[in-house]
Image (cartoon, rainbow, N blue to C red; front, side, top):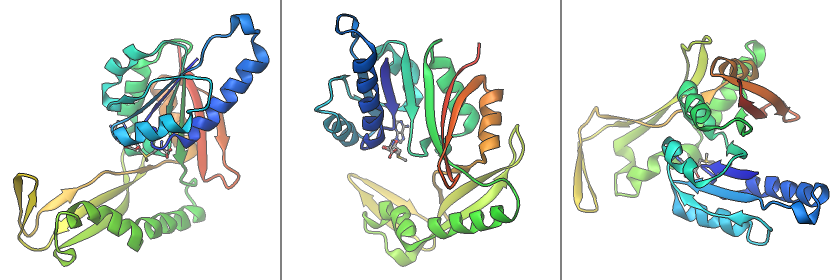
Length: 253
Ligand SMILES: C[S@@+](CC[C@H](N)C(=O)[O-])C[C@H]1O[C@@H](n2cnc3c(N)ncnc32)[C@H](O)[C@@H]1O
């Protein structure tokens, strides 16, 4: 089996899976029939690909790092053979429109391939929903997170008082009903000129920079999306506090 992980980051989680796959392979297959395990760590950041490869240096797996975008999965998949365990980990799944990412993955998986991804969960509506919303807002509007989001402009010399970070958590409509999604914006408060390399970028007071978002699904909402997008859930692993899920699915035939 090939283990392919897109948006691999430092590859810590993949190392855990690979160790288990190697152990299983050793225990179950006679030496004469042993097929190698292939590992393809993929990220848009080449440094992460290097780190992920280093992390499994001493494991008996064939490895090939790829610098690439998940959006180019149709081209990337020519590099690996089925069956594949295709992973998107680190809550990265929630940074995409659900139908877009599920359709992309489904179109590019073969029969026999497995899809594994994790998500931070939003509790089903009720009193817990209110405290979950408060906890999410607290974390996202913390000083650390605000600085993290302001950093791209700060590092090019923008004055911290000349722009504001705004984080909202609001319901949005979808095919399966209302979903919570964060929205992140930078509001420019003063005309500013930033020099980035050879380019000069002019910001005007009132300009808004829209940033990425994160969906906050309940477990039922994720399961419903997988169903409507042609996946069959094989197993859902819930963390003890029910705040995170790891979902193993395959293409429904
Ligand atoms: C939230 S981090 C998760 C990292 C890691 N999987 C983990 O569990 O800690 C998202 C990762 O996806 C990468 N990434 C962002 N956009 C991407 C894209 N379009 N295609 C591939 N990787 C992407 C980032 O560089 C980053 O390493």
